[in-house]
Length: 64
Image (cartoon, rainbow, N blue to C red):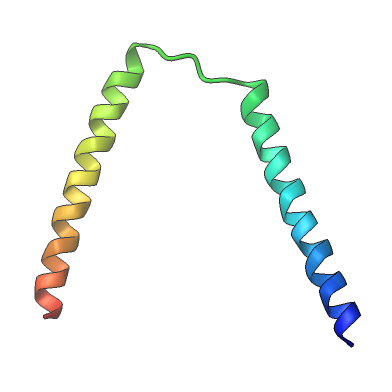
């Protein structure tokens, strides 16, 4: 019983690594070239995160 259990865990773990590897290869094949749009996007992302943090802290206050 114990032996088959450990084998199953090991093989499923290997499967996860394979999936991660293919994803990583996709990024390697098509690297993103930084351009003028990146700064704009970073700014938008930062603002979105700020808004999300603010809305989250409001929810926390309501819960308490």
